[in-house]
Length: 552
Image 1 (cartoon, rainbow, N blue to C red):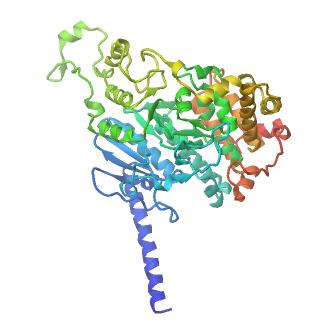
Image 2: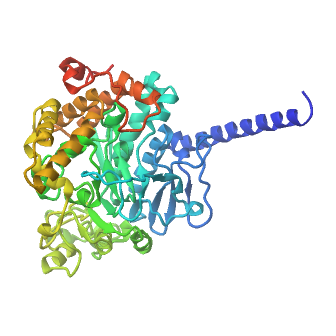
Image 3: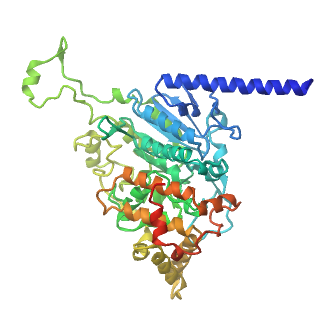
């Protein structure tokens, strides 16, 4: 072949060879630095200047990488550019966050999305999802007042892309993907678990807080990015589970541990009601106020424009290792002052004398930017008790890890959450021992003849919840209910890690199961697919559910 076609072919081959060489070189350099090759999938820049939104590992059919990191003064900003991540992007972002979280030369890691962002400055216009709706059902699913559209902030991995890639037939790759989701949750949470030489689990905690401000919808594995010290909900922030509509259960981020314990961290009224079970089984969309009233978010900031104020405040704040007013004890030529040592028998020369003062400024900034927080404190004129707590007089070492103990006067009665109200109304129904009884209870309420407006509203909500459950995979619903039961707060021996491990086994089996295959091969959106293996939850046997908990 000769002429322009031959030249085009040679240029294409040359470009592919150069790209492969670039990836190999970058991989070697990352390995030398002790980092996994997946870290190359997340672009990063220092200080000012343009940033490439693609990396050698970015798939050809993706316009940008899923996320990018940038230095902004003394904080590190993570931009979410796409709602779904590849396996390498999940692992790479987990590594970057864990590395940043252990950096004492910064004060925080800020993971945020905003409709004010611009693509050329690391933004997320590719994450916009139109959700036009003609009417609002009794249980609001996605409609945002005055907008008619929301951002899809984070959704973990793309299940249909996973299926089309053939990964369900490759157990090692599938396991690696789910490990990436789990590692991202662990990194955002601020803890790195590893085994020592005796195979004992060792936990290393971050010193700088991880802050997440998801301006849009977060679903399923995407909540891994919301497990840090602070989660700031805007007016458009919402959370829901879509996996049961796909024939799947929980991604391994610990939702079967988190959801049964909603409300516990901040001693909220929601802890008395089955809010977690409703979120798990009905795909109910928890909007911003629901998230704060259950502890899924720590603060309500309302306007996404607050992101600029928060970012600027963090950028100008001194780093973690410079925070505090106390000075270390004097030393003479490397020796501890003998007089000081004699005065304090319990003195520890390695003790951080400023430990109770660090992260105070970050906590104050979160409050200053918020309308209220999950502990029940409306941000305004601080009470004397609150001021003393922030000054450290009550012994609160780190507000980013202890927000709910000393927060001044509560005003929980002035706040509202539809989710908590629904959970209180259907409390007995959602505490039933199995999914079939829950659905039967909702069916009885929805079919009853209402006697007044309140009963009519209750009947409509029950019908909506029941309809959502009937649209989901019966096998997936039973698996999720079993996961929730095994991770219940009454089981004191359960940990976040044990629930993650159990969720991974179940999800691995469901991803290779018939229901997921049927949904993935259809062109039907979540909530409209009906061709499941089982017609109802009553057709699902106990043996089928138990088999999902056995590692293949």
